[in-house]
Length: 208
Image (cartoon, rainbow, N blue to C red; front, side):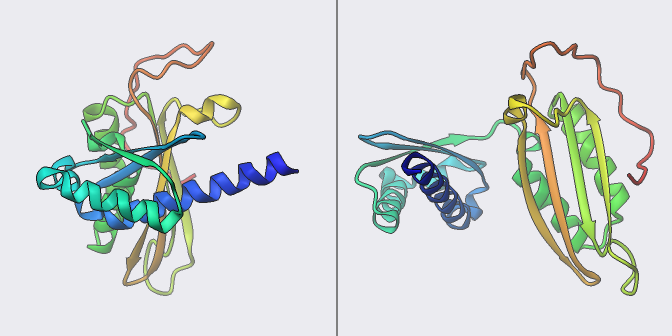
C-alpha cells in the first residue's frame, strides 16, 4: 500500500506541476512537460514554441519560474530545461487549442478536422493521428453529438499506447461547450511487429 500511495502521490504532483506550467507559459506556446523525479533532484523538461520567452534575459525568467516551482510544490532541487518545438503539428495540446479557436470562430467542424488531419500527416509527417470532438456541434437546439476521425496507425491497447502523444482542449462556442481530444504518433516511432504503410488521406470526413 505504501508503494501504491507513493505512486499516486507522485502522479498527482506531476499533474499539478504540468497544469501550473501550462498556465504560466501559455504565451510562450506551452505544449508538454516531462518530469523525472529522483531522490536528489527533479528534472523538468518543458517543450514550448518560444524558448527565449521562457528563459528571459540573462536567464532571469527561468530562474524565477524555477523558484516558483520550488516554493509552490515544496521541492528541494528542481531543475528546469526548456526545449523548443520543431513542428507544432506534432504537439497534441497545440493542435487541440488551434481546433478550439477555429470552432469558436464558427468554422465548420468537418472542415477543421479534415484540414487538421491532413496537416498533421502531410506537414508533420506523423505515422498516425486521431481527432475526437464532442458537444454542441451544430445549431443551438441540436442535440450534443461526437465525431471521431483517425488516419494512419494509432494503437489502442497494450504498453505501446505510451508512445502516442495525447492531449485535449475545450472550445466555448455560441452553441455550447465542445471537447477536443487529439492523439498523434510522431514520425520515427517504432511499434513492435507492425508494418508501417504509406498513409492515404481520406477525401471526406464521415461520422463514427
